[in-house]
Length: 146
Image (cartoon, rainbow, N blue to C red; front, side, top):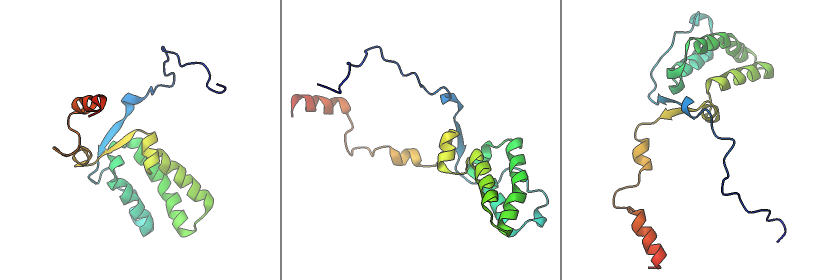
């Protein structure tokens, strides 16, 4: 038949294996204020202070190093200017920098940051006595046609 191509090789290897699998970071989900306070906080608008506080209380902030906090301090004047007069160029720069710090779910997936949610393992585990508990017995029943 046309379009099927050659049979798959039995010695096939995945050449694009994840080389950074050990670089994953797990952070606790509980918001705990971390990091330094915003320098000259009193000079910024309320929205900017709320923005910085949100970053300080975010789960990924537990993994921040001094350079990450420095980046947020450098970004604060841009955020403040954006709240004063919203401009696309300011928003683009803010979005880019926040993305590098893991602002969204996709950003955290790229950075291999996992947020450890309490009770998440319990919610994903099947309840005892419900569903299939013994896969070997289930496979045997399916193979026998019973």
